[in-house]
Structure formats: structure tokens, C-alpha cells
Image (cartoon, helix red, strand yellow):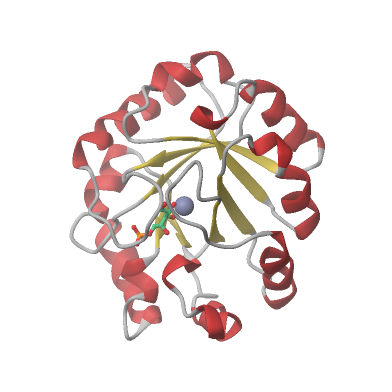
Amino acid sequence: MFKLSPSILSANFSNLGEDIKKVEVKGVDCLHIDVMDGHFVPNITIGAPVVKSIKKTTKLPLDVHIMVKEPEKFVDQFIEAGADMLTFHVEATKHPERLLRYIQSKGVKAGISLNPATDISTIKFLYGAFDLVLVMTVNPGFGGQKLISSVLDKVKELKKIKQEKKLDFIIELDGGVNEENIKSCTDAGAELIVAGNAIFGSADPLKAIQNLLAKGA
Ligand code: DX5
Ligand code: ZN
């Protein structure tokens, strides 16, 4: 049974609290928050003060995805702001293992993310050190992009490794998911699916969630 993590990137930022309430429904496991620095990705979004405010408005666990260079400089502020899951990119730091262990030591679930072109071998020596892998199915930076379907092979590979090595981590998938392709994502092995535009870009986010859950099952 897969779960959804709606990405607020496509929400109405001037009415965020109200938009978040619309997705606090069954089948939604957490709230995906995209942090971008204009360096690691060509876009700037939100910072820790906004995460802190969101924490006060919702009971949903916060799934914070930081697309920033040198994430070690920023994790403390997101942990303090209330991140329940904190995911950074393997491409963005020289010492991912140290950072994963640090995040876990603070009682927060630690996630590692891979850009579409990044091979799974980059996390080969990190198994056991993370609670989730976030597989990017678009090049990070913007909502509403098209899912790169070849990346689903990476999800399949991860699922196989997880089973063979009897590992305990969540396979999360992020980027370009919609009603048409969500089944291919769950079939590949995605357990937690991020959806931004498909939910907040819809006139009826609740219906969009129900459709995604039905189509992906
Ligand atoms: C992209 C972000 C995604 C984005 C997904 O850089 O990491 O989380 O919000 O949005 P959609 O579902 O619109 O591709
Ligand atoms: Zn994201």
C-alpha cells in the first residue's frame, strides 16, 4: 500500500494554511516541502521560517527535501523548524554518511536523494545509514515537469536491493507524477509518492488525491 506526500510547491503560497488543510486526508502520509537555494538547482523557494510556520498549522509529518549545496550548513535550522524527515542530495555534499548519521542523531528520519542521472552505486556504501531514498524522476528545480520514465529502472533496482539485503528504508519518488503514470511508479516499487502539480494544480485537490490513490493501487 503506497502513500502520498503532496508537494506544496504548486500550492498557493499566499494561502498556504488553507491549501494544506485540503490535503490532510486518508492516504496522505506527510507533507512534502521543497527547499531550493538557487545554486544546487536553478530556482529559489522557501526557507526554515516558512517550515516553522507550517509546523504550527498541520499535524502531518513534514517531509523536507533540501535541494541545496553543502546541506551540512543548513540541516540544523530545518531540524529546529520541525522537519520529521529531512532529505538532502548525495550530489550536494562530500560527506553524506556523516550528515545522515547526524540527522538521525537528532531524532529525525534521514533521507538521501538522487538526481535522475545519478547512479544507484553512489549510495552503495550508505545502506543502513538512511531511512529513505528519494528518487528524483525530474531534474530538480521546478514543479510541473514531465516524469523521466527511464528512471523507474532505478526504482526497480532499489526495490530488489532492499529485498535482497533485507533493508529497512522507504523508497520515495518525486517528480512528474500524475494519474496516468502513477501505476508505473508503484509497480516499479515506489512506496511514498510526491505529487505537486497533480494535486495543488487541480481545482479539487481532494478528488485529485483520491484519483491518484485509486490509479496507483
Ligand atoms: C522538484 C521538486 C518536487 C516537485 C514535484 O524539484 O523536488 O518535489 O514539487 O512537483 P510535480 O509533482 O509537479 O512534478
Ligand atoms: Zn521534492
